[in-house]
Length: 474
Figure 1: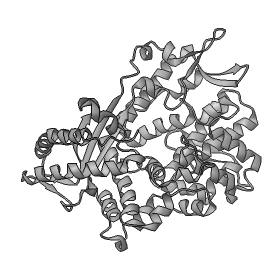
Figure 2: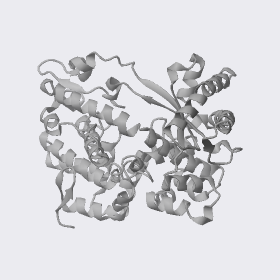
Figure 3: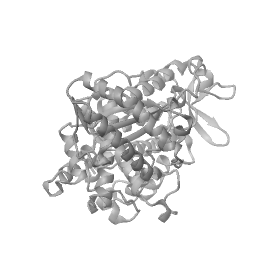
Figure 4: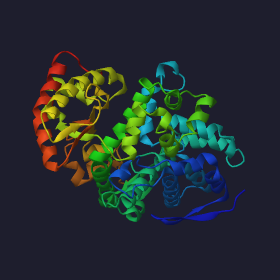
């Protein structure tokens, strides 16, 4: 058993770890997280954003420990919570969340009905499989403890308090990535008063379901700050134009690499099944190996090679069109909302082909703008839609509303108790459709001219496409 020690962290100072945690951190499977960036290629717009899932996992463990002490958990509960927090991201693939989209595309859920349901996140299934089976941790984590850790991280665990510390609307994961991403991106959007937020958290007994994590009425303002921090960093960093483009270029590199280039290595990474062979192959990959392997000269001429080299050299696709979906005719709106989904890949390609012809013609008529790929090949054109949820909706994320302790009265919800959030219309979400293209121009004036020339033409093409009966599946 390793000795306990302290690790210096740029966000929290020193993070203490015990001997068991030290053994886990020293294992090859955990060290792999050092080679998976937290924010993929966000460093192309925020140069400092080179931090990884490794230090994020340490930070989540640290915050979960503080919460456990604040909420007066028993020693064994605190031990298990720390382990769950430490291991919560162990199943991430290359470039973190980008791999989640690729896994969704190439995993056949129908063939694995006993392993996946419609709402399961595949990387979380992989995390559970690693925790359950990894032999490097046999001497560190007992089998019964592994089962409890998996339940804590998964939905429906019998103790909602433990689950909400590592997976809830104000969990340790969100608290760490807000502060950590802000620090390394050099922004202040995600900063909040963690000490004050923790001071006002409560463990409240429910006679039926057990203990729940709640905020006191005095903590409403601290929680407002936390939720607004999440909203601002989502809009300003995670939804930054360059971040959206680089993520979509990565996903397109993977899909073209598998579908067109027929690179079997790529397919083996993302066609998930729950076999040991898949897990062994999946865990052999990280950001560095991915880039080095698929930019090798043996793949020269392949789409995957081309797109990854563009990313390496920062020769990015350009945003040539951006439109609120509500500004397009009604018949286009629902199909566009779903155009980036795995079920709509064929229709998305058809629309991209139609748009590409218009873009090529317009660019040829503009002497200062050029196409930077084969003008007869539309595969590097990307149409992408996304939604920026209202700040009130983001306060819940995918979880239930944050409960407010009003003892001796019945609990309320954050949205009801916050005058600020109670006044916000929950329906005020914004959905956008973007188009990224392999074009170049010399100046910002040239860019504006190209976008102006394309705006009406692209909108007309999108409208005619969907009015022709080619509705996307929901």
